[in-house]
Amino acid sequence: MLFAHDTEVALRGAAALVNTAATLPTDTDDLQTVEELDAFVSEWEWTGSRTHDEAELESVRALRPRLRQLWTTEPREAVAVVNGLLAEAGALPQLVRHDGWSWHLHATSPEAPLATRMAVEAAMAMVDVIRSDELRRLRICSADDCQDVVVDLSKNRSKRYCDGGCGNRANVAAYRERKASQPA
Ligand SMILES: [Zn+2]
Ligand SMILES: [Zn+2]
Image (tube, rainbow, N blue to C red; front, side, top):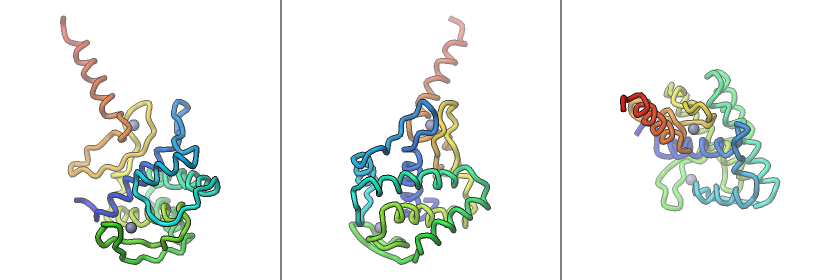
């Protein structure tokens, strides 16, 4: 394991959140309704307070481009984003244990708004990544027709494609190309 368990979960969750946004004209936004937010929240096992309203949805949606910056900017700017997110939320790191998770960090209270908790959890994970000088593990999917973000937690830093199926599609395309170039 590269990072602490909660850091890795937080990084994958942040990437999944960023990837709900449409980045190309052919993409669909997967976070357009409160119901879609509910599904995302339960998939990623977010606990804590919810308001289940449009304002909550809007604030989570608005967080996505800020988090995406962590994948696309220079380290110095990523640091500014992380520090900004932590300062805005008045983050206060505390070790907690709940719902079957062993000791991990929370830096917001369970009553803080969902978007704040999401922002701080992602920022705290980024603190680990940047301190370990591993920012290069955050990259954009290598598929030509995809701009989704990737968290490479592999030992040999070999993950190039997002979790949206681009790796499979690239394998199939490469296989077809090999077949096509073979003499019949
Ligand atoms: Zn927790
Ligand atoms: Zn992709």
